[in-house]
Length: 119
Image 1 (cartoon, rainbow, N blue to C red):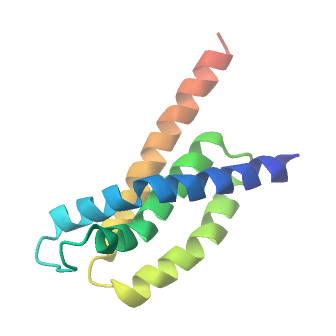
Image 2 (cartoon, one colour):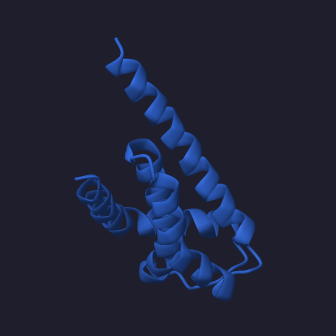
């Protein structure tokens, strides 16, 4: 049953990537304005896919994952990390910051949920 819950979180992560990739791409170009991918929103969406994946995967598994959530996060982030290492090694710190922000938000949500359950 826990595997089903984790697979559901992966599915929700994919939906999060779909909805937030353009926003993450726009954020990337606001932080790094000298990077040019054109003004086409599709280019921003494509560059935002790995960022949205890192953010939503880390957030959802930190907040709602089970006991082995760190294992799931680590294994599922391997493709995104390899992509970022190959295509954007210069700005790898930005992806790390995105992951840390998502981790912090996830821990906050997890803390709030446990406090509400024990009331």
